[in-house]
Image (cartoon, rainbow, N blue to C red):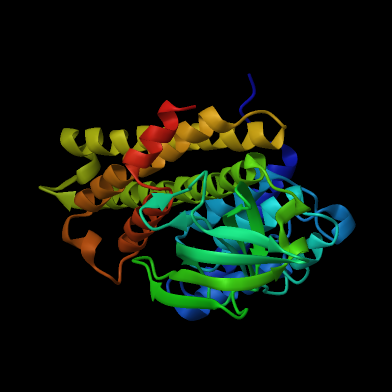
Length: 359
């Protein structure tokens, strides 16, 4: 059995790593200029439009290649809108959108931000959304509230899961339209996150993703979102592990590197096991989905691991750093915040365990 990356995915991974390294060296790792430079450079390299169909000017690649970029984003805890744009919007529109809807993806490499609204108050990933849409002639009228919408204020369009005339569906919404209220805040990782309220918001009927309704449309959106969350978290834990391993190799106590202490070695081994499990489950889910196979079992495992095990693993990394780990000038806090927010966006461990039990 060959677990090696395919050539296209390996090339994407290496290109993304090189772009991120170059831009971080130029502008530093954790400031607004660095994140904006990364966003621009990824677009110039064509890494934001990987999933766009070839006949629409993209590379026509799939979940594995998109996940390769997101792993590198997570590895450096970048807060540019890469996850929201590529996994939450570009991938599902490219896979499900009509030819006319593909035009929403024009300009992604030029900096166009896209996102998705898929959480509702007290209910992440609802299969029967409480946000409603009803047809009214050649329009769709949307009402209800979504929470935890990333980059809502700057997004060109958002994919919104709804119940349309009683059927699950997804609409492509303009969050600047009449009847939309965006209440913004910032999550612990510094990513703009908003609650979005629709009050009889009128959209064109052709705004229905794929111009159809049904549970399969919502399921595909959720698959894309979870694959993106898991890939980003996989990279974030790998970055935290690399940082921690380097620290315990070089930090000495009683004239010995911390890595030589049995308790330290055992704890970092536990983090390594968590990281490898996350990587294998995520890679399998993305590969199966890209090959047209059912990814739900592997995706349920990966997303549960993200929500339940990764926060514990990154806390261990914090612990092994001692006081250095809580210094805001040291990068460890970025990985902790990133994984914490990704776990919450995945729905939390209880919700993911319930989802795993129903696969």
